[in-house]
Length: 452
Ligand SMILES: Cc1ncc(COP(=O)(O)O)c(C=O)c1O
Image 1 (tube, rainbow, N blue to C red):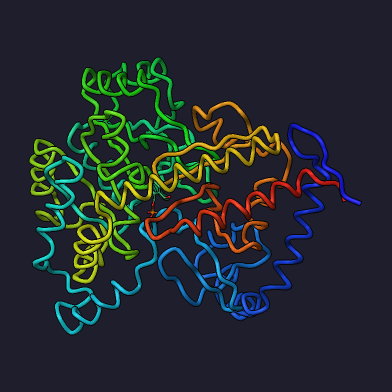
Image 2 (tube, rainbow, N blue to C red):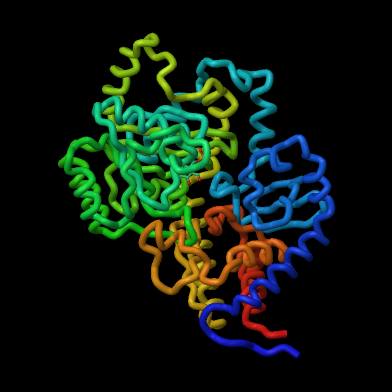
C-alpha cells in the first residue's frame, strides 16, 4: 500500500532506502560499463582520470557515442545529457564538426607543430569582438589561462597577493588548493580568500595595496546553486580595485553560459583580464586569456625582459597549446556553433526548464530552490537564495539527497552534473529533452514523498 507523506525535507530513512534501490538498478542495467571499469585495473581508480570516480554511481558509465545532447553507453542505454562535462560540451557534442576538420586538416597543417597557422589571427579577433578586450593569448585549459592571468597580474603590478572568493573554482592551481593533500608548504600564503557578495570584506583586504589581482567568477556556479552578484558588490569590485591599483580577473569559464558576451558583461563588470576555457573548440582542450591593451603592452615588456631568454619559458603555458587542429576547431566552433542566436535559444530553454522544475517542487511542497545563470541551472536544498560559497556548498539537509537525485535521474535516462551538481542546457536540446528531464525529476522527487 502506498501513501503520500509530509511536507518539508524528505525523511532520511526514505532517502537511504531509495538510494540503495537505485544503485541496485544501476548495477543491473550496466554490466558492460562494470566490465570496462574492471578491465581498467592499470589505471588509478580504474578510470582515466580520478574525478570520474566522484560520480555518485558504483562505477562510471562507459560511453560509446556522443552526439548533440545525447549519449549512448556500452550497454545500449541512451541518455539526455544535461551534464555536458561541466559546460565543457556546453554547445553539445560536435563529433561531426571535428570529423570534418580532421579530414581537412590531416595531412594539412597537422595537430601539433609548435608554430602558428592562418586560423590564429581570426580566433583572436573573434574573442576580442565577443568579450571587448583587444588582446588574447591561448592556453591549454582554463586552469592554465588562470595561471597565466595571475602570473601576468603579479608581474605587471609587482605585488604579491591575490584575492579569491570562497566557493569559486578556478582550476587546479596550487595556490588555490593549498589545503589539499600534497600541497607545497606555504602554497596558499599569497592568497586572501573572501566571502562573495561582501563589499566591506573586499575593502579591508585591498586596503594595504599589496593585492595584484582579484580573481572571480561573475556568479558562483560551482556549488549546489547559483550565487548571483549583488549590484553593490559589482560596483565595489569596480571602484575598489581601481582605487587600490588592483587588477580584476573575471573567469568566464562557466559563467560564459550566461550569454554571448559572458556574465561579466550582463552584470556590468569591467575586467582587466578575462579567462576562458572548456567550450571554445568543439571539446578540444583550450583556454584563453584576454587583456586590455595597456596590460598587453606591460606583459610584452615582462616577457621580453625574461631572464631565461625573451618570450621563452615564463612559468606558464604548455608545449601542446593551440595546435593547428585546435585553432581550426576554435575558429569554426566560435563562428558556426556558438552564435548569438544559439545563446538565446539555450537560455530560453533553460528558463523554461527552471520554471517547470520549480513547479514540480511547489507541487510536492519540497523546500528547495532552482536558480539559473543563462544555460546553467543549479538546485539547492533550501528555500533562501544562495548568496555565497558557504550557502552553495552547504551539506545536504538529508544525507544522500544529491546522490539520490543524480543516480535516479541517470537510471531514467537523464545525466546531470555531479561535482557541482548543476544542469546545463545545450542548444542541441529539444523540447523532448526538456520533457524528459522534467518527467524524470518529477518521478524521482515524487518517490521521496511516498511511503510503500
Ligand atoms: C570557473 C572555472 N574556472 C576554471 C575552471 C578550470 O577548468 P579546467 O579544469 O578545464 O582547467 C573551471 C572548471 O570547472 C571553472 O568552473
